[in-house]
Length: 322
Image (tube, rainbow, N blue to C red; front, side, top):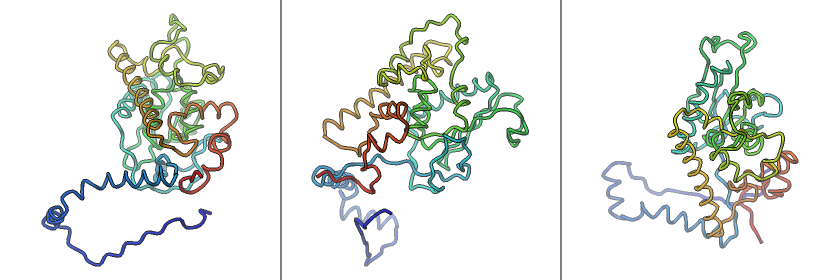
């Protein structure tokens, strides 16, 4: 149960004006700065709630999936969240860096499906974003089921474009699965084994390749706890598969620059929260996602709510700190 009512807000209009150009211009002439003061007023009220009232902030959640394709079609252990299908007020738009990562993932999948003969289907939760299918040449008709075609198929359901930056920033496919699916739960593959197979390169792909991590991989591993780097279950390839799709040096350099920019932005975000003494609900800090992943890898996903978030994460509303 959500508990006792916390706030009731009522608005009773006593007059109405037709929404016409003349009426809008007249209203702006009467209060020319009102339009530009909305955001500063919101920031002021938020600061009062956060600093004076001691209310912690929640990270903006992703809306629940609204597509009928999001029925529980995944294998045991990787089931989509138990909440019923519903919608949301607004899905976050795709940022420039997320768009860059998505294009690289799509470029990788177009080549990878030919190598593996596995069809890959990306199903977004946002109904305004079309699903995408990557099929190898001469693949059986998409309307056939896997049992009829006897061809493997991987479906990835994702809540957010963060799927693509997670794939770009994770040093390996098992790391991406641990972080994005098991821990943060922003995407759900129909098969974990197929996901790892598709987004990994076999060791013999580069038989003369050095075992030393290249620059991009060293950058990706800097923010990952040692326990994950040392885990035999999470091997790290010397070259990231999304770096390996480039045949020219300029493509590799661009990829590494984007990884560096994302990491710098994350560092700036952490610095801003520390500088302004801003607090998030424990267990939701974006800069601690790999720490949460390490805890999940060691002791299971329930550790997020028990050890790191405590009892506060199960409460409704922000947390008052006495």
